[in-house]
Image 1 (cartoon, rainbow, N blue to C red):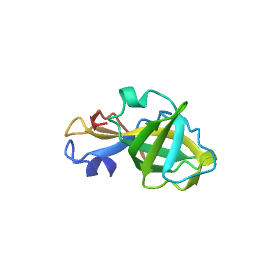
Image 2 (cartoon, rainbow, N blue to C red):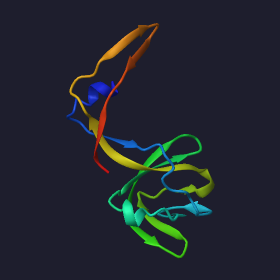
Image 3 (tube, one colour):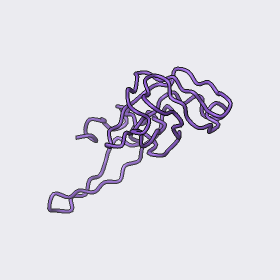
Image 4 (cartoon, rainbow, N blue to C red):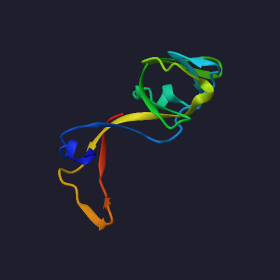
Length: 127
């Protein structure tokens, strides 16, 4: 159903990088401000304003970066909506990009026994 709802190249979707783009330095409960290790975000990736945060249960939440301030050895991110989780419960913080399918048609191979296989090209349209 996911592929069908994309309507080919028409409907965009958000997709995380599934990489650890930020390493958490905050301790305790995190609401709207999170401290992360310096990673040259402001120099090279400040146009990326969307992140996905995965907790240790495997659940993802989407957030926008409204402000980023470099302190002596950390980067302080202000995010919306509030996370409201303990720092130790965060597994990964990834960039979140807006993507779309690169083609209007998708080939699906039915292998049998309820198994299908497909290869889909996607294109990031907004970091």
